[in-house]
Image (cartoon, rainbow, N blue to C red; front, side, top):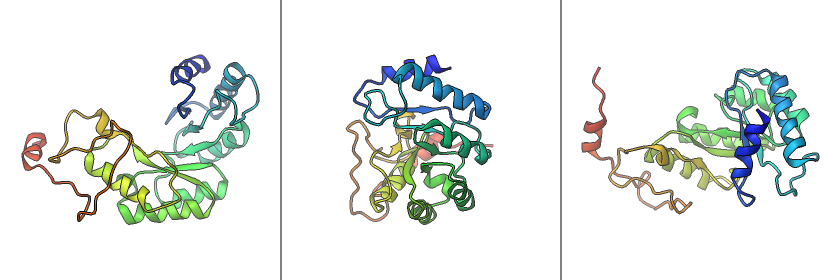
Length: 210
């Protein structure tokens, strides 16, 4: 496993943020620890140091979401910033992550957290506990992307670089002008709402009939 991670990591190039994602893996805690430790030894060749050219930015959700005790154990032992993603299911889960000191950063999603205000409240809670916050999703359309960009724009707690990359993976959208991510920047306007217009024809085209 470590060799595969090393190859993927090195292919990303020295100038990009690097992370290892073992999201939702059924692996045991010991396997996750060994994987990251092997990566350090074989790729970095030294204890974690953010100044090294091959230093990882973070490790994301290395074990199943409900195992917060295991997440805390991994965080204490790997020496690399650890981000909780699927484990951040609701405010109670976030409080438990904070209590157990199970993560250095947390990732929130507007859809998963239940709306703008609930997401922002969790961002503020994480920030008050000294955690970094990443906003974003892996699969989503323009509306969810703009919602998360809006949350990120109004909070200093959110670190630079949203992970709202869903539109890059989709073959279509439900708005007249889908958001463009090719320049790496999302510009938010001052229009009411998110400034996007829903496309009625697209809704008809993608409607699923039971």
